[in-house]
Length: 147
Image 1 (tube, one colour):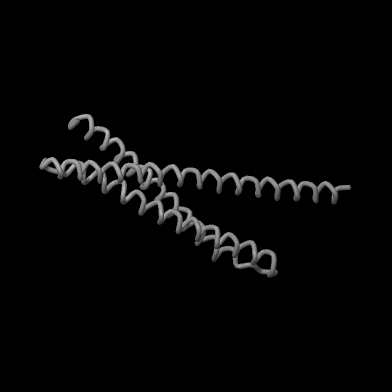
Image 2 (tube, rainbow, N blue to C red; image 1 turned 60 degrees about the vertical axis):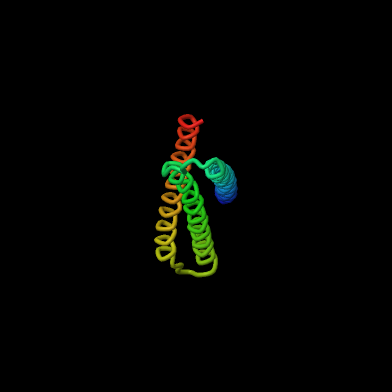
């Protein structure tokens, strides 16, 4: 009887873990789509404003260029975050393979990599988000003051 409950508990925990990872992946994907969409629209707006100013023989100010660059760099950091997230998943799979295949798995080796890549992925995502916010707010301020 205890063995049956133990198996049910183990199955339940595996299912909860799987659902949690699926939800985390879905949330991460949605955030990435949002970030790339907003950054892309902001870059397009920056370039169109530069084109407009150039055609009307008006100076293209440093703030407009800087806010546009914030959006470009935001996308770059987002790509870095994707790369680091991929490495987290890759190393988690290595841990799961080692646990399943070997009696003495090398969890510590991969766990350290997971921690490092997780930190880098989170750091890159935060930098990307902050740059996106600076770029969008900066563009709004630029538009308000100049048009």
